[in-house]
Length: 443
Ligand SMILES: Nc1ncnc2c1ncn2[C@@H]1O[C@H](COP(=O)(O)OP(=O)(O)OP(=O)(O)O)[C@@H](O)[C@H]1O
Figure 1 (cartoon, rainbow, N blue to C red):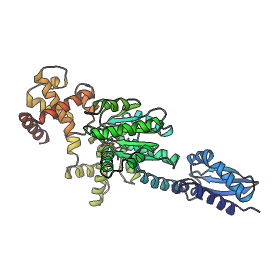
Figure 2: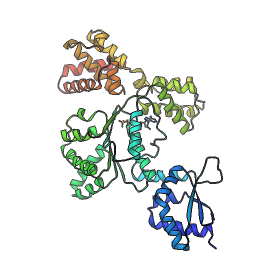
Figure 3: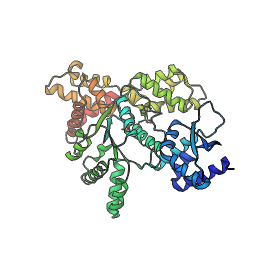
């Protein structure tokens, strides 16, 4: 008489030979045999995702292993564990297994779709990311995220990788920053290991390259990346890129790369609105088990309005402060902690309106003209300087800065920034003026 444990042991041994260790840990180790009656083997799985995976990928081998061992036709029945089923204690295992996988691919296991809060500024980017993770290499290739610092580009990029690995642990995912790609390439040249370098980058299913604006000026790296891109794209492999601006706004990026980056879909991520900021803080507080009243979350979200990384940083510091002084987190405590630690100066006191006001005063132009459309040099220059300082001194995204200047396009802001940054290299008068203005604004 065939018993459940012996049969299951034989099946798992079969899978152990067949699958990689992470795959085995993710799919087989988390499965629990429940009963065997009338040639039907009931198996309990931790989620729908696991059941889908078993049904499409593991059922056939299971039947074969069972037949090899028992010379019997066994039919598997899958049931999904529910939250109100406390008898099975494997709920955490898939998460742990995914975490190991993520580390191998250099992904942050915390950056998943589940931990990403959807809001107005990022919903399109989020949806595109999800589509790509479900059908890589089909719809949007490459997928290109652009926008200001700390707004979730890296998070979404990793979420694609994490999801693809969770769906299929055998997926090859590679995440690099453009600097890491450059360094890797230089090392390959020095150690004459270009072949291995190419093999490494061209054999993946998903290539994630962060902050590609740093490819600017690097001719050799661009050349190499062009070939990497083509090899992957020709093979139907998915490529995801991020940058602080659109491909055609990256200075010194070769035209052929710009045009390839435009083949797929470019989506921008803009700063979250107040509701989204509160939701992000609440999610973060819950995840880290920080006890904080809603009113206090709103207070923080109201003071830090442009950058999610700063928002998270403020919460972490407030948490640390409350532990230090051994008091619960209240709005009062937050106000005093942010003030005493001088934490919120950069992001909340240094606002674009403040910069506009100081610049307008300095150059004796009206605020309306500074934000308006007049093309006279006496107005255009201060306007560009104000845009430049807004980008330098705040974490506002380019579209946000454009908005604050009478609804101008973010390309206008980039143009202004580049113009002033360029002039600053040689113009000593301008250097002095900008220094004065910075002191004035930060006073
Ligand atoms: N919508 C969101 N929901 C939850 N967390 C978010 C969201 N947006 C950003 N974050 C968090 O904010 C932090 C900064 O995000 P991320 O590193 O992805 O920004 P980025 O746009 O890649 O910035 P950079 O250009 O500096 O690389 C991360 O910890 C990320 O998890």
